Structures are given as C-alpha cells and as structure tokens.
Image (cartoon, rainbow, N blue to C red; front, top):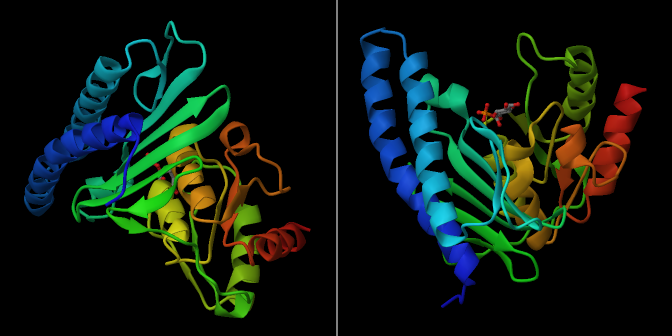
Length: 265
Ligand code: IPD
C-alpha cells in the first residue's frame, strides 16, 4: 500500500468530490447535445460549481493558502509560501462536445516551486498524483515514463492553437517536423492529461504553446516524479510564466527540443 502525505490526501479528496458533480453534469451535457440546445452556459456553470467545491475543500484543509483559479483568478492568502493552482475542468471543449476526456487539475506550489499535483479523470476514476520526492502514481500504480529512445518510435501528444489563438504558423512547422520524424501524433484536448500520459509512459512526449498555469501546474509534477523532463522550448523552467511546454521521457526530451527548435528555424 502507498503511504500518501496528508496534503496529497486533501487534494485527492477535493478532486473526487468535484469529479462526482462533474460526472452528473456531463450526463446532462450529453442530453443537451442530443436535443441540440446550447451547452456552453450549462458547462460554464458546471465549471464554476466544480471550482467552488475545490476551493471550499482545499481552504477548509489549509485556510491560509493562496489560489490561482481558472475562473476565479488570484485569491491571496495569509500563507505567503503556498499557492493552489486549480483548473476545475481541463478539457472544457471536450466537455462541451460530450467527449469524455477531461480532468480536474490541482497543483500545489511552495515558494515558486511545484511540489504536488493531482490530475483526476472522473469518467474513468483515474487519479494521477505525485508529490516531490515521493514518485508519481495512477491510483495505486507507480508511474514511470516510457523507455523508448528514438523519435521514430515515439508517440507525441500536442495541442493545436484554434481560432483566436496565436502561434498557428509556428505550430504548422512543428507539426510537419513531428509528422516526418515520429510514429504518431495525438490531440486529446486536455493538457493536464497529456502530461499525465507522458508520466504514465503512454506518450513519449508532449508539446504545446499558449497554455495557462492551471492547465499544466499539476502535470509538471507528475512528469518529473515519473522520471521525465519538462521545460519551455529553450530548455528552461519558465513553463508557468511562458505557457510553453515540452515534456518528454528522459531519453527523448533533448531530441524533442532540437526537433522543435529546428522546425521553428
Ligand atoms: C485547454 C486544454 C487543451 C489545450 C488548450 C487549453 P481548458 O484547457 O488543456 O488541451 O490545448 O490550450 O486551453 O480551456 O479546457 O481548461
């Protein structure tokens, strides 16, 4: 049996509680889809409800911690060291479209460093969790990044900048390079789960630009604790500030950075 720290238990319990409501709301979205009524308003209220649950649960356990919330923004706290970084539904577009691939993401930062992360996929009851120095897990199973060492064998996850997002021309160049050099590319639609998949060895790597801190905070801890690497496109650790992420197993991270650098020219 794994012994988890009290703080990780708090994060997991909060994610589960928010996840229960989300599964019910997702069932409603599926009905709305069929009746062709607009789903966006319903989903944004589901998002707000989930965030409220997470905020309540997390602040009940640690009253002084600050928050950075997708919906609610910055909430200051008496504790100047700790900050929760929370995305109630990462994969909102999937949720709106009735695609069952989305997650609750909770990261915990201490003095500017991510120290714990939970990415919970409520539909499949998959709890990805990690704490600095204690390893990464999916439910009870220890996670380890994949051992593949050649780009030609690698499956990569990515995010495609949609209408209104910058970086589309850069992305096309990166995509061409990845198409030419790897075994396959996946666009799943949840950055938090993309990082969890790298941690679980399902994908060898992941890259995306223009992300928000709440999309990636928890996933960063998962990848690192599973033995992988996460950086921005230059190899630096500015992911939360820049919104750029390149994650990979220990053999391929450097090769991915080189591939993307060359593609961008
Ligand atoms: C989105 C997802 C998606 C990524 C987008 C994000 P949201 O987050 O993580 O995979 O490609 O860039 O905005 O809006 O569903 O929380």
